[in-house]
Image (cartoon, rainbow, N blue to C red; front, side, top):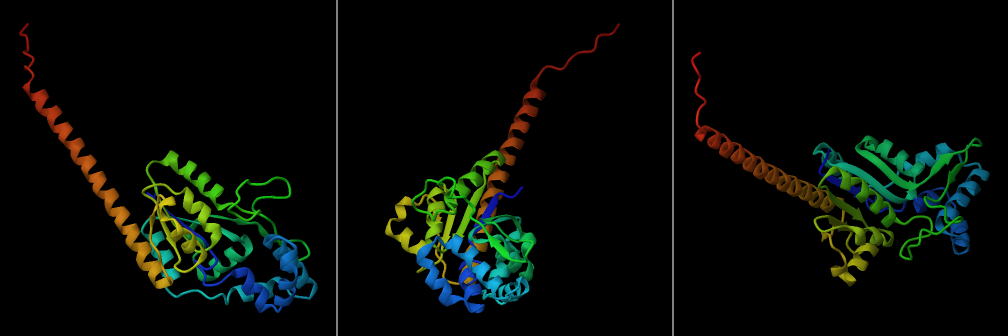
Length: 275
């Protein structure tokens, strides 16, 4: 099992835009989106927009073609592939939706790099319409976090991940994000973890107001090139530290074995008795 778990936000972290806005804009529904935005939660609005686009004759294939054109910095995919090749476990925690994320990752050839995607459910129904639902069903009960939108508290997701990792030994988390929704999970990180906020984005703004609230080490980045450099530097540094600790433990164990053997040699030898 990997000693490093890298957790990515998706919009404006892996890709260089907001996937919801990109699809709505590219399919010509921006005006309706802006008109409806004040009337309902964002997640509910996206489901409504998919209904409107479907009624206008837009197909799933149209949406997929738009998603294949999503802007992404050229160094992000190599960074993800390198971190995966170095043995990191990669996960996504995003307030986008599963259909958008998986379609984009598969197009980029990196879907298999990720062991888990935590996001709002998104699937195509029997009528060929994309449905988008909340990760947390806020119509039944609240997740209780006033820092996060009603449909998803990323902090709750991080706590679940931390609880599962605690059963697997000493693991370090590297969390990458940009938005205000990434602040809650950043607050939940522990000492020895690392958070990578995108500079001059909402997460970075919130962190710099009071960095002492963050227990993890903070490493800002501006674009995909810096993301790659900083992420791989952290992975190599953590990996080197873990290897040194393992070597020290092995050395101590060998020393104990040597002492044990030396002590055994000082014991009186058993004499054979001639019958």
